[in-house]
Image (cartoon, rainbow, N blue to C red):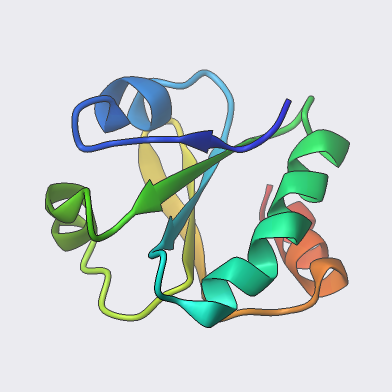
Amino acid sequence: MSTKAVTDANFATEVLGSSKPVLVDFWADWCGPCKMIAPALEEISEELADKVEIAKVDIMENTDIASQFGVQSIPLLILFKDGKPVAQKLGAAPKSQLKGWLESVL
């Protein structure tokens, strides 16, 4: 299971309606740090597939969701549980830090 793209149109179903926690990566194509953490998020998605889903929202194409959650800087990771945001992390970090943070908030 790898990361999945989520849009304004399917955010409510894919993220808010998910039975599993969902980590949403708010990113953009022009964002260098976003591209740096993308491979780590893919690996974490595989490693923690039984515990969490990882979704990606391109903020340039999905402005409604980005503004709804007040996204002003990227990469921004927000963990949703039971349809509510419960934790967030701003900025790029090595895979070990990203995974450690995610496991600590799951």
